Image 1 (cartoon, rainbow, N blue to C red):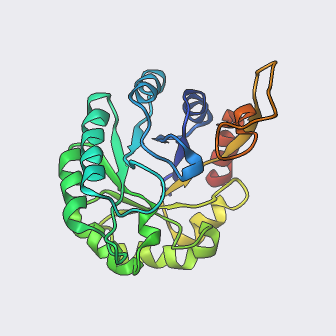
Image 2: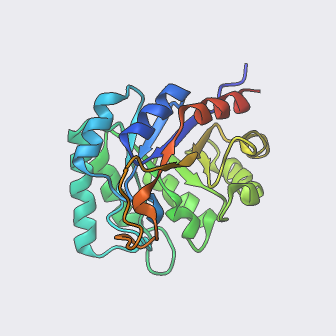
Image 3: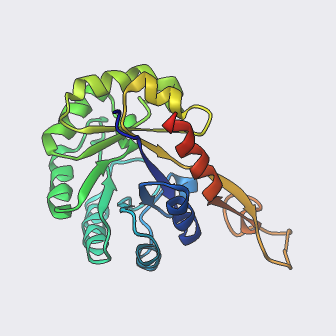
Length: 248
């Protein structure tokens, strides 16, 4: 019998974490600021999420948005955030560091992985920004990371399925390849079938209107106009539908 595909849902709120678990997700990646692709969540958010869900919670360790070359001060903050994640009951961390030339920063990534143990470690889509995906795969495997999240170097995983399939083959069981990048209910089963992955990473966020009765539409405090009165949440129903789709 074929093993069921593991579904990891990326969330940035307590409500989304709870909905993901209720919908059948087997793991959560916890972030803040998904508009920037996700940065390290607060201690408070992690603590409350950990108290509300029983499935594994993996915490992104990313000190800021933008590229994946980090200063020594930013690297120090990543080390501290790993310690916090461990102390607050995280089951894993998600990280990635590149050199300026686009290769994996092997030395500093290894330091973070050693600091994170015995937690599970995922190398995130900084991988997709690397200059040579297959060299990066070998580097990440040599470091001893548990899994690699990738879209095959494309914006959408569906466009990178051939590359992801090659990565799965070249990994030769040294590391788990997890597909991610705009995977949804309509394309998940196709991506799984064409790549051979056993884990997928999804967002599934849906816009939800603010419950505020008074709304000042004359100004916006964030960089995206109108975001104060709209949130993105994972809905239990959508996670359940995805799980049903990949089970067939």
